[in-house]
Length: 363
Ligand code: PEP
Ligand code: MN
Image 1 (spheres, rainbow, N blue to C red):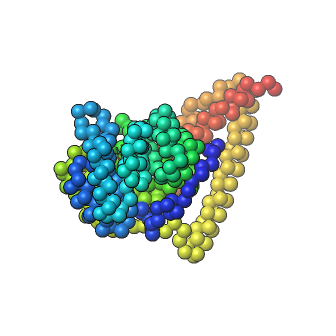
Image 2 (cartoon, rainbow, N blue to C red):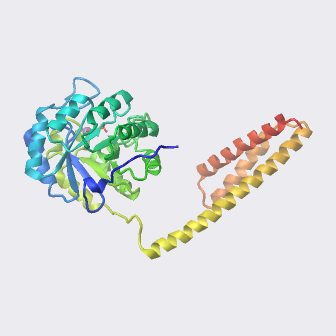
Image 3 (cartoon, helix red, strand yellow):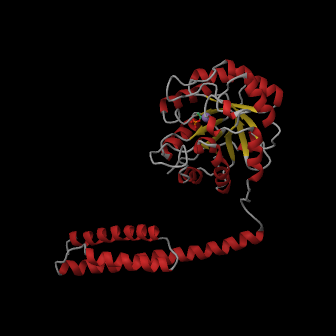
């Protein structure tokens, strides 16, 4: 069971008209000019409400550019004066929190490398107590929903109620077109556990290259995520970090224009039709479970019969034939081969377990 969260509704502290709410700006603050040029172009895009920039950059190797540090916060303040955009930066320590607060940063975010460490979360959370600043929490590098929800719960218990989750994909070892695998099922699980928790998607870090940003953003919108965090740079080719995934503000404008934002609820006719289809699904699921229960009781009967006749549980030849027949039949009815196989395997595992129980039972 997940404990309830106390979340202050997003729109009460960050008004926006319609999805997506957009957080944008460069991966790293590099110069005053870069921040100003990028922000002046971004402020023309109505969906962009928050300007982001990394001040302290967590890098894999110490020789890489590690951010401009505190002087970047002064440039950020200037952006706020010039554009009115709200500001957000990543914080990973109490010192970062302190400096960010001293420089009028409006929202803080916790990066994927920090969120895995409960000591850091506790420390940052304690530094934030009593200041009512909103916090965005990225998913951890590893594909584990509990680490993510654990950090969210920890902050919440420390009294931080203006919270937003950010899906930025997960490290994994297989080859893929993505820099970080989206594994959509993980943010979906978080959204189901905490329906009041707003979820942004960060397609920049998921994709690692600018070409995939549009389809990934579209998918996030179709999953009813609230908004997007997208890295922009007035001259992406000159960026000191994450060059391949940064886009110009103009490119961001085009992406946002081509997104299709589907309604969450739809018209009355739509809802009625959906309701009737859902009723049909409920009925089918009920039948499905009833059939499975009936199948298992026949399985038990067979188990008992095998036991009385001293026959082994696993009859490989018979099982292979069952698989062949069922897969063939399923494919004929338009079902996916892998899906039938996975389903049969689950049924078979349970069948074997049931018959073992019968064998071990003292009659
Ligand atoms: C970033 O947003 O620039 C960043 C470092 O992100 P993440 O923590 O998701 O890697
Ligand atoms: Mn980045």
